Image 1 (cartoon, one colour):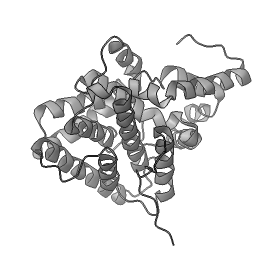
Image 2: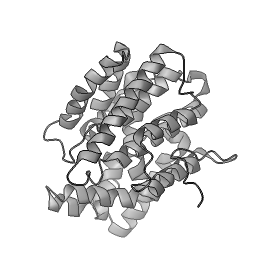
Image 3: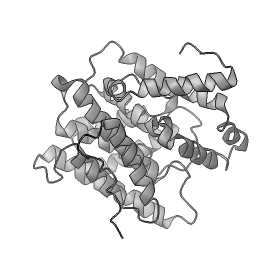
Length: 293
């Protein structure tokens, strides 16, 4: 039997970044859940895809990698100990999706603006954000802004501290995780609209994290399955809201108000065009006019 594909290995010569991203997301689904490699393997694979060796000698990088491995181990242990299934959407697969999407956004950012390429530790910080942004998520929705994101940060802080993650990196990771609350997406994009997009600007990195978080739900190759998974998750506490997700008008709302892609990386991947094509089709079948967003 042929070996299953590496979760972030879609690097055949001549393969474009968007094709690589889509194939990587497919690879993850081929392994979920029966032959799941583990979040630590996905994290390491993403760093390798970015060209950073796991045995990096830099202490700043080492602290981040060791922290990430403990986060991953904790999530895997928690999943094994659950008496019921993981949340249908906010599970280990989503965390892996988010890391793979971030890795490809970082690669696209390099190509879009090679003169401002981030350092190894900066790109590693971005990967830790995506690994931890839904840390031990309970499958519910926020009752107030950043409720679940705040809980994640509170649980991750002692882990970051125990591994000696630099205080600046702890602050950036916490900031970006808090900004993954969908209610603040528009504000975050507007905040950096006139800035040069740099990874050392934590507001820019927060935008990249928001994009990585919902990129899988935007791409046609995974959007339908992920929407169904979210509906299944929400059906446990709000059946009406869950049912509405399958409606074209809900998809239009998501694409116009949540799936915002303004980074140079997203534009380089062609994500705004992909989104616009979906919106055009959905408006044709629903007669819903553009919102002007």
